[in-house]
Image (cartoon, rainbow, N blue to C red; front, side):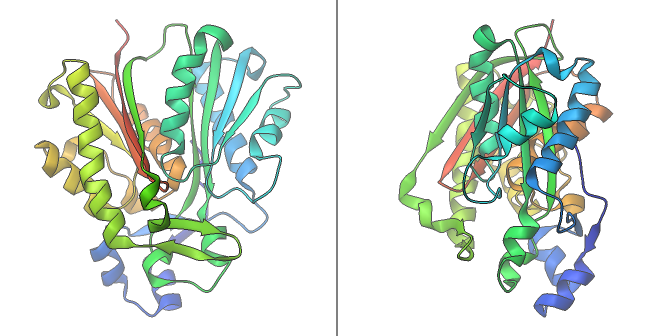
Length: 301
């Protein structure tokens, strides 16, 4: 993972959107977030997370068979950031794929990677977002400016033995709600907060229960749920819906804010550094589109 060094507190945001620090934390559970410098790009964040992941996996970039970069905040146009990331890792013929999806992008990329390892071998999945650029492209909206942060996470998906084994996954999309959360660089980020929270509260637990049922795994047997870090209230709603203690739904949103498609892999990277792999693990995300799903993994035996 990689987080920019600049910490943006609720006090700084509150002064810009005419709200109080307490109001921001009460409605989102967020106390601070990281914002990258103006000259830092999505590719810069992605490369930093990629290098951290490769170092932890103790492999070189030259062994990669494919790179997948998920980002909803990369600048419009082509090529996307994946080509630059591959070049900066020293690769000149390795396929590099962009997944231009907000919030759920890294989950979709993980699922695709798990299906591609038999052909491509080691697949590096990166979620990288510079949401501060999205926010500051237009006058700040109090309802969205309080939520988002920047950062990147990465995971190596391989046919070789690793820490976890992917067992199953489910993915879903419903374009009828595509206008509930949308952005283009010509106009401000649009978010129907009520619609998004209602849909996410229903769809995240449903996807998790679906993949657990397919794997014949009980909800109570899952020690940790690694979710897209949208806001603290949503994480608690998912825990309540699943009937699990809130501490089983990993949360770092209070420190990093909502980093869109980077958040799932940042949460997984941070949690995995602090905890042994014990019992099945759920990865799950929900985002603009609407796109959502869940992936079930277990410690490699």
